[in-house]
Amino acid sequence: MPELPEVETIIRVIGPQIQGLSITEVVISHPSVIAHPSPEDFRRRLVGRQMEGVVRRGKFICFPLAGGARMILHLRMTGGLLVTPSDFPPEKHTHVIFRLTNGMEMRFSDMRRFGRFWLVEPGEADQYSGIAKLGPEPFDENFTAAYLQKNLGKRRKAIKECLLDQSIVAGIGNIYSDEILFRAKINPSRLANCLTTAEWEHLAEVIPSCLLFYIEKNAIGPEEYLKTRGRDYRNTPFLKVYGHKGEKCPVCGSLLCKTVIGGRSSVYCPVCQK
DNA sequence: GGTGCCCTGTGG
DNA sequence: CCACAGGGCACC
Image 1: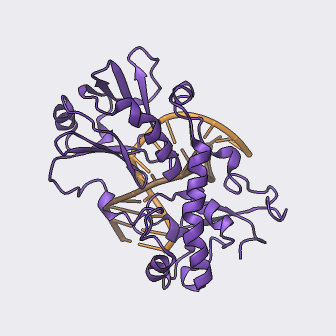
Image 2: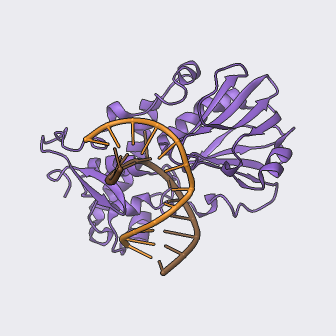
């Protein structure tokens, strides 16, 4: 489910709700979602710790803790986070509950249970979560056309697969890679080593602007977020190609095609995207 | 590089 | 019933 824009939306809602609060209790009903350390160590080490806030890195959610430790969460496909009163009806597939000093709870639910938590101690290198392998944020000043061309310009690999490579640029998933390539008018199957300098420049501009557009479309208040269980803030009404196979291209009216690239379904306009 | 796998739910 | 789903990793 969540790619960069959705994760950004989640942290903007959750941040003010948990900032400065301490964890009084951790209830883990499905230990497999705790990747590191052991679920019992995870629970024990978190109790009494204060959360300084929450930040996003790629699709990861990071909770810096007072004293220098950090809790890290990746929602993968179907993970969700909700801050609720303790008597709020629980979501199905709730696997971890953090009880907080103000009586509220932060709850992690995940139907498919692909999501994972990590806890990294102060001064410890994070060799567990995968954050260390991430490329730059799309909004980073180092994320430029020159960077893209230098790192991808010789790859004999579909550009769509390249955009999904988190070590090149952090945060793009299957939905937004299609949306980005549609806006950039580049066919998702094109090999990276065949893109022109002008196309790299276009991509370097479109990637951040497209993601920012969806972050803004996603904006939601905490009441609405809770009411919709953190599920209905998504961008689906604004997506131009993803989920629209067989419909008319919003630019030229041709029928949108679907294909598989790198094992992921991909929708594109055969006329607009060369 | 391609494939299978981790899971549950939904839609054809 | 089977195919597929917004992610990422291990494995030939």
